[in-house]
Length: 74
Image (cartoon, rainbow, N blue to C red; front, top):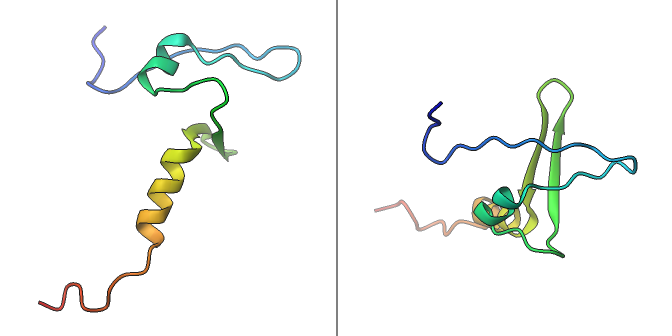
């Protein structure tokens, strides 16, 4: 089965302590290293999404930074 470019699917089992192991291929694709902090976003209807903390904070900084009022007045 072909998958769309840049789209992935992995499975992980939850252990007795509620921990999951992120598959090596996923860690490689997303450059996840030991000690990295991950954010878990939850929606009771849709499930859980995981993002690297650094990637999310960069995104948040970009969309939340103050805009120069002169930008776009050209």
